Image (cartoon, rainbow, N blue to C red):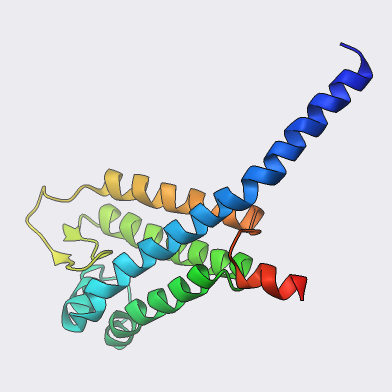
Length: 169
C-alpha cells in the first residue's frame, strides 16, 4: 500500500470518528444524566432513608451525616440538569468522576471494615443481613460509571448541547 492510500484510509477513519463521536458523546451524556435522576429521585422522596444510608458507611462524622444525606440527591439532580442540557459538559463529567471516586471509596471502606450495608445509591440503604451484600458487583457498576465519565471528559463535544450552542455564538 502506498503512502497516499494509507493517508486516505487514515482520513476516512478520522472522518468517521468525527461523525460518530458527537453522537456517542450525546448518548453517554444522556445516560449519565438518567443514572443521576434514577439515583436522586428515590433519595429525594425519602430523605430520612438517605440519611440512614449515608450513616451506614460509618465514614463521615455524625455532624455531617444529615447534611450529606439531605443534600446528595439534590446535588445529583442538579448535575443531571447540567448533563441533560449539555452545559459545562467537561466540568460536569469531572464532578461526576469525583462523585464516583467518593462512592468507590465508600464501598471499599464498607467492604474493608466488614460492614454489611446496601449502598443506598438508588434509594434504600443502610444495614442489611450479613451475606446479602455484593460489593464486587457494586465495584463493577462504579467501574462502568467511571468509564462513562472518563469518556465524556476526553470527548465532551455532543449534539443538542448548550455548550455547542454557546460555542457557535
